[in-house]
Amino acid sequence: MQQSPLKALSNLTRYFFRGEALPAIADVEGVRLKGEEPHATPPRSARKRQDSPRQRLAQEFRGLRDTLSRDPAQADEQMSLFSVSLIRDLPEASPLMNDALSRLRSGDDPSPALDRLAEALDGPPKLVAGPGDWTPMLWPEPAPKTAAEPDMPPEAQP
Image 1 (cartoon, one colour):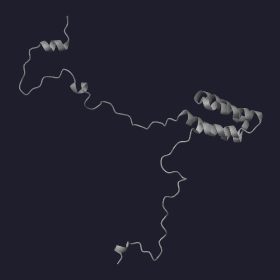
Image 2 (spheres, one colour; image 1 turned 90 degrees about the vertical axis):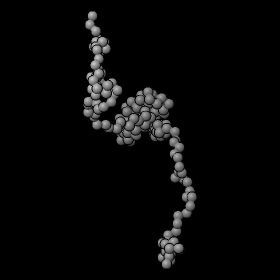
Image 3 (cartoon, helix red, strand yellow; image 1 turned 180 degrees about the vertical axis):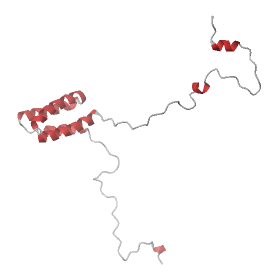
Protein backbone atom coordinates (compact mmCIF):
# COMPACT_ATOMS: atom_id res chain seq x y z
CA MET A 1 0.00 0.00 0.00
CA GLN A 2 1.36 3.40 -0.96
CA GLN A 3 1.56 6.12 1.66
CA SER A 4 0.41 9.67 1.12
CA PRO A 5 3.20 12.23 0.61
CA LEU A 6 2.47 13.88 3.96
CA LYS A 7 2.62 10.56 5.81
CA ALA A 8 5.91 9.64 4.10
CA LEU A 9 7.35 13.05 5.03
CA SER A 10 6.33 12.63 8.66
CA ASN A 11 8.13 9.27 8.87
CA LEU A 12 11.43 10.69 7.61
CA THR A 13 14.27 11.40 9.98
CA ARG A 14 14.64 15.14 10.37
CA TYR A 15 17.87 17.01 10.51
CA PHE A 16 17.64 20.68 11.45
CA PHE A 17 20.48 22.86 10.27
CA ARG A 18 20.93 26.18 11.95
CA GLY A 19 19.64 29.06 9.78
CA GLU A 20 17.93 26.93 7.15
CA ALA A 21 14.16 26.50 6.99
CA LEU A 22 12.44 23.31 6.05
CA PRO A 23 10.86 23.27 2.60
CA ALA A 24 7.20 24.26 2.60
CA ILE A 25 4.75 21.39 2.18
CA ALA A 26 1.82 23.65 1.31
CA ASP A 27 1.58 27.10 -0.20
CA VAL A 28 0.83 28.94 3.05
CA GLU A 29 0.33 32.32 1.39
CA GLY A 30 -2.20 30.81 -1.00
CA VAL A 31 -4.06 29.02 1.80
CA ARG A 32 -4.24 32.17 3.92
CA LEU A 33 -5.46 34.15 0.89
CA LYS A 34 -2.62 36.62 1.14
CA GLY A 35 -0.64 38.14 -1.65
CA GLU A 36 -1.53 39.20 -5.14
CA GLU A 37 -4.25 37.67 -7.26
CA PRO A 38 -2.95 36.21 -10.50
CA HIS A 39 -5.58 37.80 -12.76
CA ALA A 40 -6.32 41.34 -13.87
CA THR A 41 -9.60 42.80 -12.63
CA PRO A 42 -11.94 44.24 -15.26
CA PRO A 43 -12.86 47.93 -15.08
CA ARG A 44 -15.84 48.62 -12.85
CA SER A 45 -18.95 50.48 -13.86
CA ALA A 46 -22.00 51.70 -12.01
CA ARG A 47 -25.15 49.63 -12.05
CA LYS A 48 -28.13 50.78 -14.03
CA ARG A 49 -30.79 52.41 -11.94
CA GLN A 50 -33.60 49.99 -11.18
CA ASP A 51 -36.97 51.66 -11.54
CA SER A 52 -39.92 50.34 -9.63
CA PRO A 53 -42.84 48.98 -11.68
CA ARG A 54 -44.83 52.09 -10.78
CA GLN A 55 -42.12 54.40 -12.18
CA ARG A 56 -41.77 52.30 -15.33
CA LEU A 57 -45.55 52.32 -15.87
CA ALA A 58 -45.76 56.08 -15.25
CA GLN A 59 -43.13 56.71 -17.92
CA GLU A 60 -44.88 54.38 -20.36
CA PHE A 61 -48.17 56.16 -19.59
CA ARG A 62 -46.69 59.55 -20.53
CA GLY A 63 -45.79 58.16 -23.95
CA LEU A 64 -49.29 56.70 -24.23
CA ARG A 65 -50.86 60.11 -23.60
CA ASP A 66 -48.69 61.62 -26.33
CA THR A 67 -49.85 58.93 -28.74
CA LEU A 68 -53.46 59.54 -27.72
CA SER A 69 -53.18 63.24 -28.58
CA ARG A 70 -51.67 62.42 -32.01
CA ASP A 71 -53.55 59.30 -33.14
CA PRO A 72 -56.50 58.03 -31.05
CA ALA A 73 -56.96 54.90 -33.23
CA GLN A 74 -53.42 53.71 -32.55
CA ALA A 75 -53.71 54.69 -28.89
CA ASP A 76 -56.64 52.27 -28.42
CA GLU A 77 -54.40 49.28 -29.14
CA GLN A 78 -51.56 50.64 -26.99
CA MET A 79 -53.99 51.36 -24.15
CA SER A 80 -55.21 47.75 -24.29
CA LEU A 81 -51.63 46.47 -24.00
CA PHE A 82 -50.94 48.95 -21.22
CA SER A 83 -54.04 47.69 -19.40
CA VAL A 84 -52.56 44.16 -19.40
CA SER A 85 -49.31 45.56 -17.93
CA LEU A 86 -51.34 47.29 -15.23
CA ILE A 87 -53.16 44.09 -14.30
CA ARG A 88 -49.83 42.34 -13.81
CA ASP A 89 -47.78 45.11 -12.12
CA LEU A 90 -50.28 47.48 -10.49
CA PRO A 91 -53.71 45.83 -10.24
CA GLU A 92 -55.25 48.62 -8.15
CA ALA A 93 -54.92 51.03 -11.11
CA SER A 94 -56.44 48.63 -13.63
CA PRO A 95 -60.11 49.75 -13.14
CA LEU A 96 -59.09 53.34 -13.92
CA MET A 97 -57.53 52.20 -17.20
CA ASN A 98 -60.62 50.17 -18.06
CA ASP A 99 -62.76 53.27 -17.48
CA ALA A 100 -60.54 55.31 -19.81
CA LEU A 101 -60.70 52.57 -22.46
CA SER A 102 -64.49 52.34 -22.30
CA ARG A 103 -64.77 56.15 -22.60
CA LEU A 104 -62.40 56.17 -25.59
CA ARG A 105 -64.30 53.37 -27.36
CA SER A 106 -67.68 55.02 -26.73
CA GLY A 107 -66.44 58.30 -28.21
CA ASP A 108 -66.38 60.22 -24.92
CA ASP A 109 -63.41 62.21 -23.66
CA PRO A 110 -61.10 59.86 -21.70
CA SER A 111 -59.14 62.76 -20.14
CA PRO A 112 -60.78 62.69 -16.65
CA ALA A 113 -60.18 58.95 -16.30
CA LEU A 114 -56.61 59.34 -17.60
CA ASP A 115 -55.98 62.15 -15.10
CA ARG A 116 -57.11 59.89 -12.23
CA LEU A 117 -54.87 57.13 -13.61
CA ALA A 118 -51.92 59.54 -13.76
CA GLU A 119 -52.50 60.42 -10.09
CA ALA A 120 -52.59 56.71 -9.20
CA LEU A 121 -49.34 56.06 -11.10
CA ASP A 122 -47.54 58.99 -9.49
CA GLY A 123 -48.34 57.48 -6.11
CA PRO A 124 -49.18 59.15 -2.84
CA PRO A 125 -47.73 62.59 -2.16
CA LYS A 126 -44.26 62.51 -0.63
CA LEU A 127 -43.31 64.60 2.37
CA VAL A 128 -40.21 66.66 1.64
CA ALA A 129 -38.06 67.74 4.56
CA GLY A 130 -37.54 71.46 5.04
CA PRO A 131 -39.68 74.48 4.37
CA GLY A 132 -41.87 74.32 1.32
CA ASP A 133 -42.46 76.94 -1.35
CA TRP A 134 -45.48 78.27 0.54
CA THR A 135 -43.46 79.18 3.64
CA PRO A 136 -43.41 82.96 4.19
CA MET A 137 -40.11 84.69 4.56
CA LEU A 138 -38.86 84.53 8.11
CA TRP A 139 -37.02 87.86 7.98
CA PRO A 140 -37.15 90.78 5.60
CA GLU A 141 -34.48 91.24 2.98
CA PRO A 142 -31.96 93.95 3.89
CA ALA A 143 -32.65 97.31 2.35
CA PRO A 144 -30.28 98.35 -0.40
CA LYS A 145 -27.41 100.54 0.80
CA THR A 146 -27.47 104.18 -0.02
CA ALA A 147 -24.49 106.39 -0.70
CA ALA A 148 -24.76 107.79 2.85
CA GLU A 149 -24.28 104.34 4.41
CA PRO A 150 -20.69 103.11 4.19
CA ASP A 151 -19.80 99.43 3.79
CA MET A 152 -17.42 99.45 6.77
CA PRO A 153 -18.59 98.98 10.34
CA PRO A 154 -18.55 102.15 12.50
CA GLU A 155 -15.50 101.07 14.55
CA ALA A 156 -13.44 100.58 11.38
CA GLN A 157 -14.30 104.01 9.94
CA PRO A 158 -11.58 106.67 10.11
